[in-house]
Length: 587
Image (cartoon, rainbow, N blue to C red; front, side, top):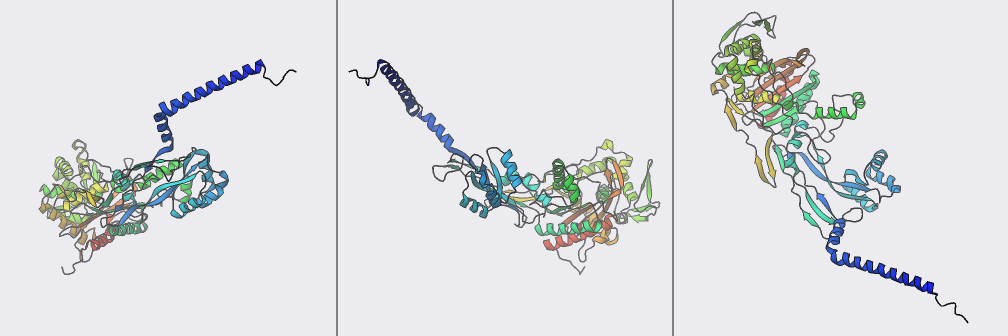
């Protein structure tokens, strides 16, 4: 009987082919296994490690900002950053997650739909939220260390300190100008990660430690800054002005003790609606216009805005005139018309159509008489007047560590005709920034010693002083001691007997000068917009503190004697108390 269970020839042939193919495949796999495991072991090991090991940045701690007495003005605190991975995250957990984080559903959906697979969901989360997320342990959610910048005084010295962006890079103020010093150098760590890139708590790690940023100490005195801001805020309200600026300095060292302007802004919420814009106007603005508005609001006008100083500049003309011996404090002028003709121009005194009559140069300063100062300017002459302005530092660069510094240069001699010389002599037709003006005026009352203004007192790294500003270093002597003494006495007379009476402080010898100008817009004077100012110092016998106040567009009066002098007095009284200068009622 025939056995049908025996394999046929065809089946044997097929089986042979299968065995050959399997053998060849096994041989191929063995060869490749040998190649990968033996010959290319190093290559694939490195590739595997590259996939398993990732480099994470360890942020350096940003340095603190202090005032001159060690009071904190800016510092960083530890927070956490939340990441989301779309591939691993279960979208059914969305509502629970957004409730824990306190983020809106609209924001979550926008990020989820528009960001790459792995992205930052939220920054600056606090410890309690961090701990809750650890307990929930959602797939696709993990956290890393983060930092948040804090400004404990909100808006104090906002335009000096400035603020950072979300990555803790300074974008304005000291935060920007000293960013490299404050920021430090980030470190890094190479660590094993899981499939979605989270660091694993085990395995070897290569760590390069960060170098933390240095601490910056400002010359600002927090107490003087506070009272200065309080005074200009009150002045803004009383005068109905557009804004008010003030700067307080140490006369001898050039240190800035306070620098303030209104309206201010909250450093912790820099993108809030500015105070001087209505809610309705703000909400109508496009995002681009809002950015422009924020940038304008963050600017420091004391270093970036130019203006015509007006009669405060008569101090400069007087100093040049005394130094050139073309006038003395007792020189007599007959001012009988209330104006002076210069070529085809009729230059009036603020007192016109009245006139001051016969007056000494001291009395002309008290009265702020324009025709007298035009005559003094003419007697000095164009060349000597121009050279004096340059010598007095008005063409010098400012070395102050603040961004946005504008340096307005004195016009060339060839551009100064008789009319220009006449108007410049009483502070018109010449522009300066507030910081430029106070530098020059300080030099005149500081025995003629021109000292550079400074805002950085020192930089400290791990308790070691890295930088100590060259505070009080004299650049040059611009006038004699005798000229400086005469100017101080003349300015004291202005406060005691003249236009500066509102600046008088009982028991303290105060000197100062008022200023009033009309705002220049696109090359044309706008009679409806005035600028009132006052520069003063104390005590006269040995000046320690100087203050410059500028009031833009006051409503009821544009005169510095009415508008700016009372603000000066309030600031000066507070500053003198803080530095320990006490009234002397015996003299």
